[in-house]
Image 1 (cartoon, rainbow, N blue to C red):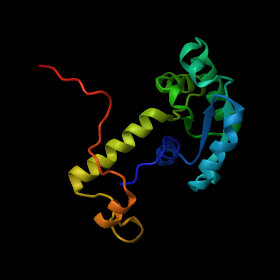
Image 2 (spheres, helix red, strand yellow):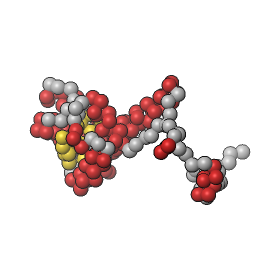
Image 3 (cartoon, one colour):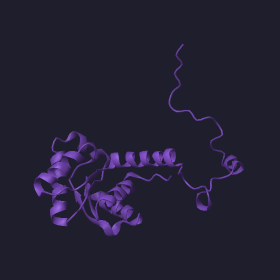
Image 4 (cartoon, rainbow, N blue to C red):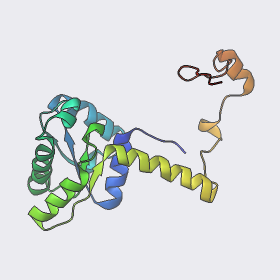
Length: 172
C-alpha cells in the first residue's frame, strides 16, 4: 500500500470525519506550499482556511503559549471559517489535539475532530499493515506499480551491498 506524507494522510482522515477542514500552521510562509500540496491531492475544495499561530517548529515545543495559540486559531477556524474539522499542520504540534478538541467542544458546544499530523501518519501506516496482515491486501504490482526486474535493479548499481544502519557495536 502506498503511504503518503502526513499532510495527505491528515486530509483523508479529516474528510472521513467531516465535510471540510482548516489547517493550523506555524507561520504564513508555509501556506503556499501546503495549499499546493492539498490541491495536488484533490482536496482543495474541502479546505476552509489556514490559520497561522506565529511559531516556528521548535517553538511548538518550547513556547509555553503554543497550546493556547493553537486553541485560539482552531476556534477561530470553526467559528469564522465554518471548519468542521481541524488539521494540526506541523508534526511538532503533536500532543495538543485532545486539549484543542476538548476546548472547541467546551466553547462551541459541538464536537470537532482535531487531527494530529504525527498520529495521523502513524495510524495510516498501521492501517496499511493491518490490511496486509488481516486481508492480504497490499500494493498492486501491475502496470504503473510494476517493480523493476532483477536485471534492471542491477543496472541501477544500487542495493548491491548489505544495508548498514548506524555504527556496528560488537558485544563479547
